[in-house]
Length: 252
Image (cartoon, rainbow, N blue to C red; front, side):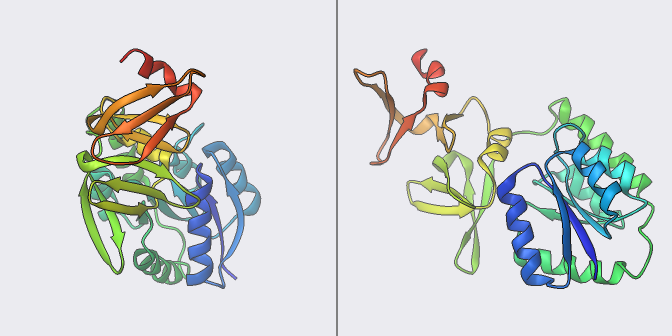
């Protein structure tokens, strides 16, 4: 039986990937999971899997740095948020990648390719990893802009939503709710990923499970007990502001 490890710091995306793999590839045995790059390195060394699904952005040691240490021993599949530099590098390399949020059809293609690649030794990824490392350095200098649009599911169709139209984001069990004046949809991006990719001047986190678009805030209420609530323009929803996020609103 082929074996794999999942190296992803977010529990919900990791669980989603595991569940989708169980449906698409029942023969694949997940022999371990890790939440950061250093754990991932130790896991691969200990379990020696055939495949490693690796998030590019990992604490401790980045997914790219991790890949440089394990790529000769396993077939790699990178998991990444939308990054044009990374996509251009992937297109030139003998490695597969998955975009967040994960799409079942895309994962099915990856599974099919992996079944074929397991018949051969892992490829030399030196050039690809150097290109990705260069792209990561460029990201650190701020060459990539904030998220401008979202791809959301609507039945069997995909819909594009301009980020500026979003009133707020709210995290649920496995998904994040995207609420606009015209309705609500769901994405598989975690709130942590959204915080990292959204414009921090426009989108403020108000709770561990909610981010609000300041452009759509009407007013902020503070009651006698010190609890703060966000009131939105032309929308009945009210968002509570937890204690840890109140300081910024007190300055408004």
